[in-house]
Image (cartoon, rainbow, N blue to C red; front, side, top):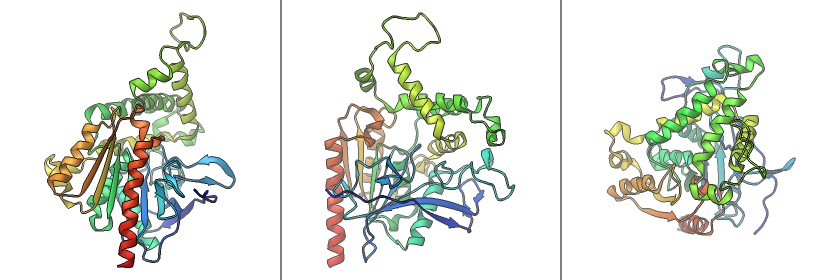
Length: 381
């Protein structure tokens, strides 16, 4: 297995406005992206990776000046890995509204000359797919060998097959859902309230005050993190272990290791993530529902899809449960689509899609082996 060289983030500027589902438009914006591997002569080996809530375009490899800053899906993507960059040209676009370089709330609003803050327009999964399509247009990629994503990224992968059905040959929808349940929307709303009620939030225009609503972000991340882990994994990792030998009999001190862990994760998150971005992205999650325009009929909604599918779920993922993945599978089968389904018995909860699991990685590797065989077969036809 060869090691990849240092990776470099690239950027693409767009002067043409991006029409949004809300009726607003994003004008004069920049998108960051990274690519790995080489686009073949036929331009038929491109794989688009769609990132989830708190991730970015930095999906694999490391930067020359930041060797410890390794891409968030590096265990899956690279030379000789399940998504093999010796075979495929892999790219990941940082979505508009993000806080990792693409135009977002921290950037200057061309209409006011000040940071957008909470005036940044609400963006949807569909808007992100449109933005990604513009990047592919610029790169001269008419059709993707595959689009792949986990969680919110899986929603984007599904969205691609519905918005640009002729441009996607395969879609890998991992640990995802056709829409959020009421419980999931509820978790997102509690997280958002934690942020907007932080005194340092200032209605989303905290940049002008030189502050960050860290307390709200910390609580939001703590809530989210609980939902990404399974009860079993939390029990195995922390149980009821105390932080010190004796109880302090305090309602405010940290008593249990799980409390210490959550606060650490929340504090770390609040140092690098933008509060307005968190509000935007959780709302995009809430809004995704391709069946809405079809009277709630998912089978009717997915009739437009032409791609072949791999759908993967994890048994202990209660935030995006296997039941939700099976809804997608059933709707595709109702339309006689080619779909493979893997339900991985993994203890890690929702986070399993980011972790090393031999069975999960084996399924993905096998699927991409078949895509590669199809691609090279087409080239030699």
